[in-house]
Image 1 (cartoon, rainbow, N blue to C red):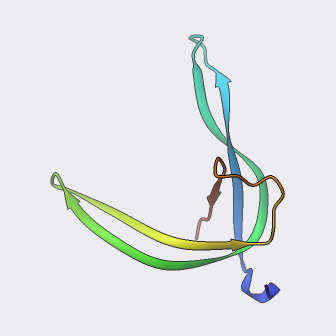
Image 2 (image 1 turned 60 degrees about the vertical axis):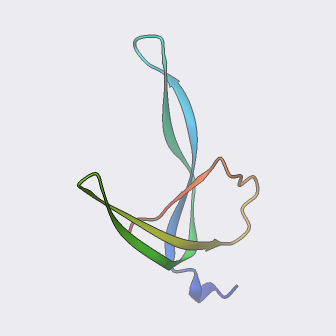
Image 3 (image 1 turned 120 degrees about the vertical axis):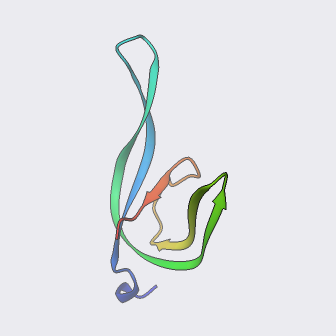
Length: 79
């Protein structure tokens, strides 16, 4: 993969459980790493359901190999 295509900053995040003040658990996302990647839009939809507009976009994110990356992680791109 050419380095010129990796022009977006992408965060790799994993979920962590923390204990709240009431003794329960709260899930929060923590950033494990920030890497360079390529973000390409594939499709976008805008739906009207129950008188509310809902938008959804599907994208392809390509990054270099990252050891330990599993489906439990999420990728965050803002921009």
